[in-house]
Image 1 (cartoon, rainbow, N blue to C red):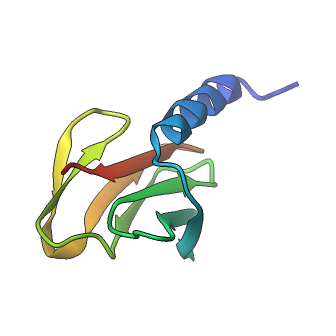
Image 2 (image 1 turned 90 degrees about the vertical axis):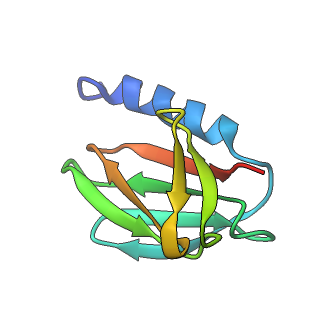
Image 3 (image 1 turned 180 degrees about the horizontal axis):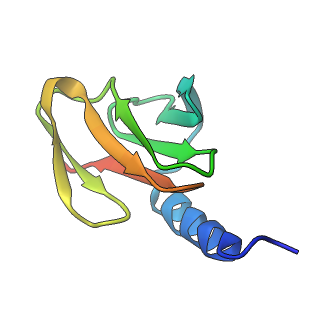
Length: 102
């Protein structure tokens, strides 16, 4: 059986994934248990981060539009990519996405 809370994690992943623009995503960073993937054809438009560990992780997503505004899919908040990067904090096995607000 799945560990307690795993179904919630999968449901959250599904929600985040459905918010992403369609297209191919490519891995742009994979270190310390966090994988970051950007939309291949337009890397500044959308990206997501996956924590593959059972620990809380903080990662920096780079390669975004400097000064661009992004919607944090899990919180609904707008975050600005100062210098083209965003900080993301992920609990165990969490996925979150950032989508450029036009």
